[in-house]
Each structure stands twice: as structure tokens, then as C-alpha cells.
Length: 178
Image: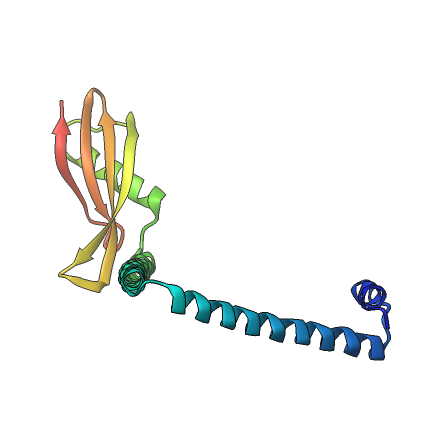
């Protein structure tokens, strides 16, 4: 059999089972010969190399592999730490979300009511200027996490910063800018 012709059929997928077996056997022989040649070549190189050069190369390789292993270990630790942090944050956010009795709009209304109740003059001209939702851990327990809305409400020319607990609905003025 002509190997080149059979190999072309093998590559095209048109070879018979006998031709496939022939090509695969020839490839296996070539690989084995390559391994033998590489092994003999390596032995000759090692035998002819200067002992000090081999020792120096070995030390260099050990340093490189040691540094590579240390960097990989560090990377694994960083990834592990990030995974744990993300898991904890996900758990805490879920607990806070499940504990919330008041949504954002309800918290806005509670903040406006708190501002209106503060002072002598009632006003219908109240506007939410800015807001933010913070995640807070209660008494150091992750399972007691809550959302607290920090809402700035403008009443006339005065701005009030109000914190509203999304679990209890408690609204407290924490700052007033006149």
C-alpha cells in the first residue's frame, strides 16, 4: 500500500477499515521511533553537558517551578477568598431582602411623613432629592441583616436626611441642612 494515498483517504474519511488500521499502525510506529530518538538525543546531551551547567540549570528550573507553584497557590487563595466573600454577601443580601416589610416607595413616604412631623409647619411641597439603600448587620449577626434607606427630603429650602428601617418602618432624621 502507498502510505501517502491511504493517508489522504484517511484524512478525507473515505478509507476502509483495513486502510484505517494501516495508517494508525504506521502513526504508532512513527511515534515510537520519535520517542526512541528523543530519548537517545537526551542521553547524549546529558552525557556531553558540563556537570556544573546541569546543576545550575536544575537550580534555575527549581526556582522557576517553586515561584510558579507559589503564585498558583496565592491565586487559588485569592479566588477562594473572593468566593467566600461573594457567598456571604449573597446570604446577607437575601436575609435583608426577606426581612424587608417596606419597599422603596413606602420608605419614601415614611421619610416625608417624618419630615412633615418635624417642626410646626405642615407642607405638601416635599421632594425626595437623593436616596441610597445600605445593608446593615444588626447586633453582629449576619442573619439579622436589614436594608436602611438613607433619603434626603427637601421641605422648602431645608434638606433633611432621614434613615428608614425597611424592616420596622422606623424613620429618623439624622441631619438637617438649612
